[in-house]
Length: 327
Image 1 (cartoon, rainbow, N blue to C red):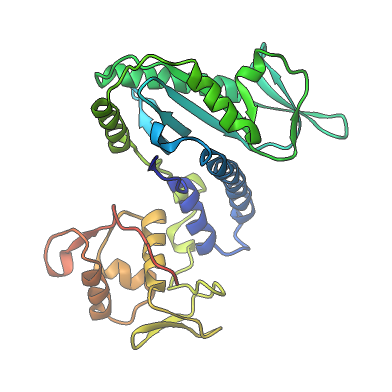
Image 2 (tube, rainbow, N blue to C red; image 1 turned 135 degrees about the vertical axis):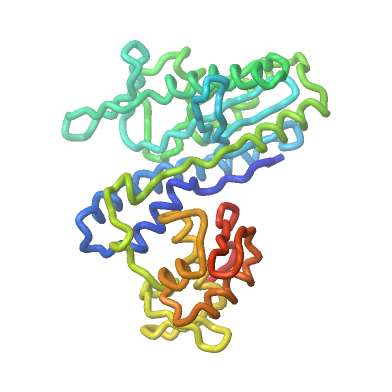
């Protein structure tokens, strides 16, 4: 039973907003595009897990995707997928890497052997998932839950990856995506003793979800970009032009004539991700290139956002604002 669905991370969404709002000729654009490409590549890997997890008996598992929580020492950690049962937890880490792969368990590295004979050394996912297991155990203890056994597994999710120099001990820690349901069932068979009753299991799941903290990322500061370098205006979700203007009830693109009821919402979300989680009437007018304060006021009122202050000084919170519309 999926209790927390998979979503793109805030960092990934922020990069998508940033690429929309930067000119392709900007000095940082190519580097940012490369960083986003890595995130997109990794997300494709974790998405690949989801299909094979449908073969598990979902009534026996509480499945949480992309959970990011803080351990008892103030360190955040994020798990690709966490399975919780009454007998144990299982942390699954996805590794979307193609080619000949070798796990160096002594040097704690993942090595990719390239076709030209070179090798690429990467961070060891086994070390990472073991660290997450330790942090989760600290979290359970800190929040007063019973000492639930925690297993961990690395899933190779790229269909063109294969292992070299394997061993029986390694294959207990690593599996290919197609074998994931079998390996999960094998781990399940090792844990027979019930540690949590149904009420405690539900409480643990709800507490974990409540404690989930999306990652934050300061786009402008990280890439040394000035706010005035961002492209303003409501953008067309079809052609990417910022020549979209309101005509009666529709936002209409002057370039391709695409019409939308919600194009302005994506612009407001870009503002939230790139500039600030609070906004005033003058900020909305400036970023969306609106012609009047009344037009901005009508938009802000329609969103029913929490606010403080009065009249021109009113500040609206975008903290929980999220688009759920199609252009």
